Structure formats: C-alpha cells, structure tokens
Amino acid sequence: PKEGEENLRSPICCIMGHVDTGKTKLLDCIRGTNVQEGEAGGITQQIGATYFPAENIRERTRELKADAKLKVPGLLVIDTPGHESFTNLRSRGSSLCDLAILVVDIMHGLEPQTIESLNLLRMRDTEFIVALNKVDRLYGWKTCKNAPIVKAMKQQTKDVVNEFNMRLTGIITQFKEQGLNTELYYKNKEMGETFSIVPTSAITGEGIPDLLLLLVNWAQKTMVEKLTYVDDVQCTVLEVKVIEGHGTTIDVVLVNGVLHEGDQIVGPIVTTIRALLTPHPMKELRVKGTYVHHKEIKAAQGIKITAQGLEHAIAGTALHVIGPDDDIEAIKEQAMEDMESVLSRIDKSGEGVYVQASTLGSLEALLEFLKSPAVKIPVSGIGIGPVHKKDIMKAGVMLERKKEYATILAFDVKVTTDARELADEMGVKIFCADIIYHLFDQFKAYIESIKE
Ligand code: GTP
Ligand code: MG
Ligand code: NA
Image (cartoon, rainbow, N blue to C red):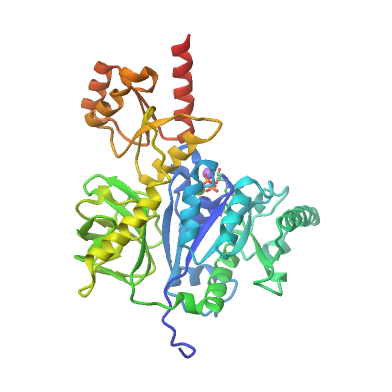
C-alpha cells in the first residue's frame, strides 16, 4: 500500500521482566489506574490486557513530539507476572506479542526472570525495548512529573547523573554478558542491531512519553507487513474464568480479524458467542469492572467472551470461528490438537492432593509450582472455579489411600458452605490462599503437624 493507505491493526506489546521491577505499576502510570495496589501480595498472578487508543498515546507524548504521526489505531499491552512460578504465562504472553518491553530495575540490574524473559523473546525473534525503571530511586532524584527523560535528566545534579551513568554502564555490561548490545535509546544509532534502553519511573512518570513514542514508532516503521490488518480471525484464549453473573467466560486476545456476536466458535467445544465484552479503554481486562458490549469487534483487542460451555475451553489454545464454507470437523480436529498439547503439560499422577484455582492459567502455574524440586507435592486431581461438594468427594478418595493427600489446595477461589460442611464431616482438609506459595507453607505445616 502507498504511504498513508496502510490499514494497520494495533500492535500487541507484552511487558515482561523479573518480579517487582514495576511492570504493572508502569501500566498503572500510563492508565491512571491502581491495579497493582489491588493485587494480593503486590504480585501479578494472571495475564492481563489493556487497550491504549492512539489519542491517549498522542496526549501522553505531546511534550516529547507534538507532531508525531500515529498510523496505528492504538496499542494493546499484555501484562505478565514476574514471579518464577509463572513461566507458562510469560511464555503465553511472549508468544502473542509483536514486540515487548523488558523491564529492569535500575537498582537491581539483570535478575533470573529478566534473563528467562530475554531468552523467551529471543527464541521467537521478538524485538523489545528495555525500560530501565525506578530512576526516581537514584539518591537525590528531582521529580519532573511525566517529563521526557532527557528533559528530566537535565534537572538532575552531577551526583545523580554520575550514579545513573554508573548503574547504566553496569547493566549494559550485564546485557553484553548475555550476548546483547544495548544503548540509551537517544544515543542508539542502529536500532535493530542494538537494543534501546529507556529510563523510566512508574511512580513519577519520567520517561513514559519516550517509552510510548518509541514503541509506536518502532512498530509502525519496521512491522508494517506484520501489522497489516487481515480478515482471517486469529484469536488466542488467555484465561478461562468464572465471573459472577456471566458464568464461565474466556478472556481472549484477538490478533487479527473481526469477531461478531452470534459467531460460531470452536475451541475445543463448539458454541455461539453470546456477548462480546471489553473493559473501557485504558482499563485492565483481568480486573473486574464495567464492560462495554460490542456487536462486533476488530483486532487487535483484549476481549471477554460469554457463551455456553466455556468451562471446557483451555487457556493457551486458539479460538477458531466457523465461516459459512468451513469444514466444522476439520476445525474441531485442529482445536483438539491444540488442546492436547496444552493438557500434556498438566501432569496428573495417581496419588496426591486436589488443586483448585480461579483460572486455568493460575492452575497451570500452581501445578508448575507444586512440581518444582523445592516443593514436590503430587497432584491427583484438578478443578477450576469455586470448591463444590463434588470436589470434596474427589479429594476424599485419598482418605483410604494416603490420608494427608485428602486435601484441597484452593487458590483464589471461594468454598461453598455445603462443600465446607462436607469436608469437615469427611475429614478432607481445605487450604485457601490468594498467593500461590502460601498454599505450600500451609500444606507443609500441616504435614509436619501430622508427623508429630
Ligand atoms: P510482578 O507482576 O509481581 O512481577 O511485579 P511488577 O513487575 O508488576 O512490579 P509492581 O508493579 O508490582 O511493582 C513492585 C513494587 O515496586 C511496588 O511496590 C511498586 O510501587 C514499586 N515500583 C514500581 N515501579 C516503581 C518506580 O518506578 N519507582 C519506585 N520508587 N517504585 C516503583
Ligand atoms: Mg505485575
Ligand atoms: Na509486584
């Protein structure tokens, strides 16, 4: 297409990095929200998505470049957890994105999940920008709220600039040890060869205009082909979750194409889209709020879908839409293959505890965590959503075989009163927590108390 005639979709950008480097806080700063403060233990345990319309990006970058040309309709940003248990969610996020932000805490440098994230991105040849976050923590930093970074740096004392340069040099060296050339973005003459670093603060907003403008410019300059809108639906399930008043819903990322209310979908069950919901622009999909209803919706977007039978949907699989000329059986077969590859990662042994989680993504993370060498708790059964009597019955099977495994580890879910009563009656233990590793602490204490 000729200049100005491109039909581009919004780029999808994944935000990755070690735990507590400020990924969610950076998004909060751009959104003007407080998602991070509402998280249990201040850690992200689910994958999220936020849509930033171009006009909001323009507003935020005006001071840096008043006449910036935004050719994309917006930016869809996927937030991922940094805690080590959530490798599967980082992998899911990185597999969906066109480009990424790798967040590094300027006070800590590269950490284990920085390197893990880096390798996930490299594995897929995904371009990324480094956000060197928490610059406001440099001793003596003078706040320049939401200012472009060069302007903010000019306000700093020599000591602050020296500390900044020292830490920056150290981090560039650490990247080099990982085989990667990096440079401050405004000094980077060979983007593509050398990865750009944007210093930021998620608390006081310095560098945020730079980060946004660099992302959008980089995407629309180098990814026109990839970002050219096509009608073929490309859609991935992020999470399967129960929402009060909506039953089991799925959160999806629509990468390309259009979804309509009433579309027949396969993934792996065949069902019909009842409602297409999105949060308001600049709001997080994974946070409960008010939703906007759509008759149809065009990529790229993060969407909540309600329909019958979604409890059988599997996070991480593709969602297929059945067109008038499509062979349903072939599409179903394809969907089954996707599902099997995801399910094969969930290991189920014969003897073990029962685990229950709010979403399939968190269930996978919980299973991954329970499998890790430091934890090693065997699992015999799994479930999603509130703990019901049927779950107690299933966990109760272990009473005869290995009593200490007649236990439910319930992550971020409610236990119905009936289920609680039945558990007490049968002698099934229920441990509830909203932070994954607290379940391990409780279970460990329980096992030790039994041994005594
Ligand atoms: P996970 O999702 O759990 O991996 O963490 P995260 O990377 O999303 O970090 P989060 O946004 O939860 O921030 C972690 C902590 O660092 C919180 O206490 C934030 O308030 C703080 N923080 C984040 N960014 C900044 C920053 O730029 N400056 C300062 N001073 N604190 C920050
Ligand atoms: Mg977070
Ligand atoms: Na955190």
